[in-house]
Image (cartoon, rainbow, N blue to C red):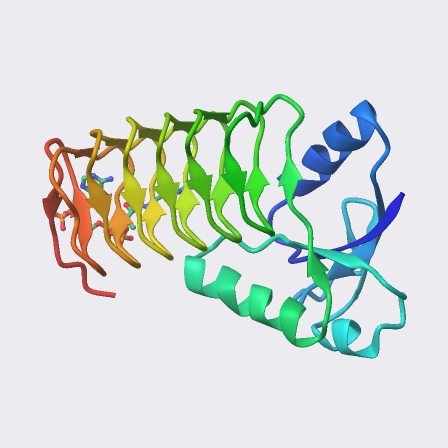
Length: 211
Ligand SMILES: CC(C)(COP(=O)(O)OP(=O)(O)OC[C@H]1O[C@@H](n2cnc3c(N)ncnc32)[C@H](O)[C@@H]1OP(=O)(O)O)[C@@H](O)C(=O)NCCC(=O)NCCS
C-alpha cells in the first residue's frame, strides 16, 4: 500500500472515497491529515498532524498527498502548489464506480461516486468532479476546474482552467466556459461564458456579484 497524507480537513467525503477504493484492492494507507487552520486533533479517525510544514519536514517519509480542498479553485491551486513545492506527488482518487475508457486524466484528479465520463474527454490536473457529474464525450476540462454534483456537460464542451460549475448546471454541447468563470447552481448554459464571468439562470445570463 502507498502512504497517503490528506491535505484539508473540511471535506469528510474523501474518507469514504478512500475506503471505497481500498475495498476493491487495498491501495492507500492514510498516515494522517494536514490542515493549516484546524484546531482539532483528529479528522474522522485520522490524526491531524499540523499545517503545511508537515510537507516540508517530510517526517512521515515518502507520502503521496491527496488535495482535499475544494472551496474555490484558487484555494485548490494553492495546495497543489505546496504539494509540488515540497517535492511530493499528488494522488488521483477515482471512485471505483467510474469507468475511464478513452479518457485522458491529469494528476491530482478527484472523481466521486457516480461520475460518468465519455470517450475522448480530457481532464486536466486537479479537476474535481463531485457526485454524479456527467461529462459526456469529447469534453476538455482545464486544470483546477470544479464540477459540482450532477453537473452535465453535453459534449465537446471546453471548460477553462479554474472554472467553477455549480451543482446541477447543464452546459449545451460545443460551448466554451472561460477561465475562472463561475456557473451558478442549476444554470442552463446555452451560450459561451467569458473568462472570469459569473452566469446564472435559465437561460444563463452574466450577473455581477458583489463579493
Ligand atoms: C452563484 C453563487 C456563487 C452566488 O453566491 P453568492 O455570491 O453568495 O450570491 P447570493 O446568494 O448573495 O445571491 C446573489 C443574487 O444571485 C441570485 N442567485 C444566487 N444563486 C443563484 C442561482 N444558482 N441561480 C439564480 N440566481 C441565483 C440570488 O437570488 C441573488 O439575487 P438578488 O440579488 O436578485 O436577490 C451561488 O449561488 C452558487 O451557485 N454556488 C455554487 C454552489 C455549489 O454548486 N456548490 C457545490 C458544492 S459540492
